[in-house]
Image (cartoon, rainbow, N blue to C red):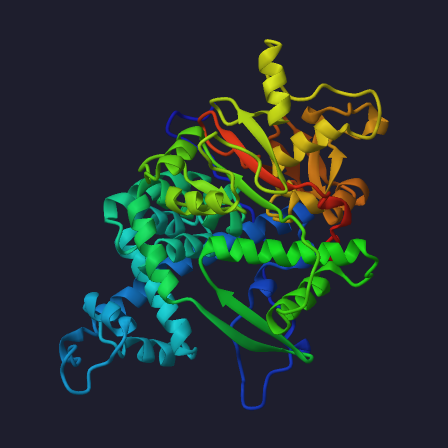
Length: 509
């Protein structure tokens, strides 16, 4: 027996030696160098699970360094006050809003030039870094803390800061705090695109008046620009109000699909490009009339506020083609579509109207046409997901339900639209999986192939559509349906009478 104060100590010794110097080729004039990480932690000796764990640790370390870098940038900016700069109205003062923003922060307008030299980058890149860093440190303390602790990665922290930075200045800090409190807990489970959309949605919900002011300011900055892409190609970029942008894209898309149905075998993207050029360069040419596709998602109270013209602070914003907008913009769009009228919600000209209903937790209950809804009400029936079918191919009602529920490919981080996705059985039909909405999810062709043919991947889904995907190295990721909100919603979907998904080219995987 050992005395009570005795204890044992175990020691493990492992040799961590860099590669033999005989195998190392140093640049001329260099006689030594620091040991590299791969020499101290040989990757070749790690298991796949260890490599995955080390990659996650590297990501955490990069987040911690990014937070420290933001601190350094803000600290250096504080050392460069604007007291020596020329003020507006003085000889030699800078013009434009950019310099005014810097002066409002009390930082010299020439600070980005110094930062660009320190980091050996462009002044534009330095300005963006300074703005993101300032937003995180001064206005989003919880987001910066999550970054500094390694819980939130830099791309997502940067995305939140980009949405709540200078364009959101007219919203007070307490508004940003409300948005941050909603967004931050969900951030790591969303792709960058989904995260930015959520931030815009919450900002519009909490402060719609400021959103409208920002929109009017942005409209003054509308423009059309061109830049070369190489290989003889160029990019035409037009910034315009969302209703005009949606209508333009819908018209171009409809004309391109008309050409596709007429036998043109060019890729759909190339057809869209050609149609846009013809519409602008040859507007006098006659073209067949086609109905466009626009998708609008709105809560009942938001639609009512849109009909009444009230912005409705605190209401869920309307989502148009995936972009949250205020009730005022929604009203403008719906009026253009002839969907709001004294008789209530109706199908737009040459279009159809369908309704999507969820319960108070955001779980999708039904995706029905207005006639189907009226029939169900007349017969005293409730709304529920379509029943399972005893075959491999999903029924049309199931396809509509699952595509509405999922909106995009459900593989974590993938944003390919549901129109490009296959309806896949989570538990394979050949292995006993039912053709039921609780066992079907949207997967783009690439991730459908990955699930079916790549070894070691595991997919599991709850009846509510929450999908967990585990990599061969044991890392799980969760993908939830967009889910709309935590309140019961009715979704207005304005669709073309022509089938859109059937002749849509899949993206190049």
